[in-house]
Length: 133
Image (tube, rainbow, N blue to C red):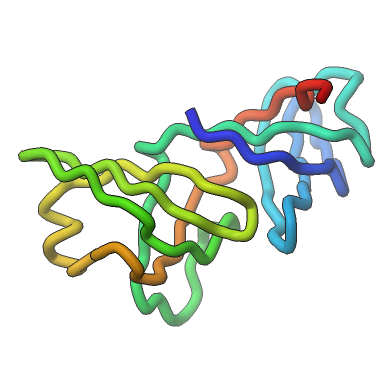
């Protein structure tokens, strides 16, 4: 599971549904959740968690995309399997992984050193309280 350190910058609620705005480095993230504990307030330090299989990659993306969570990243490593490829990405919010089909990696001609945009749906992000350091 990928983890990014962040700070809650805003919370909008409607019934039991919450849209949480987060700042991590120079990036802004949005998470949608049905549960939000009382410890999650504006200014709280949190960790954003997301599965590598929930990271879509775009190369040379242009135009509008409905996915709000977008992080420019550099491909650091590729671990190619017959069907799936695990991709280590480096960004201004830290390192994290994307898991995609090996066919997509070949079609997009993704190689170490390439710049890509990692895309994560707000409903695919999970929050936890930041671990005390």
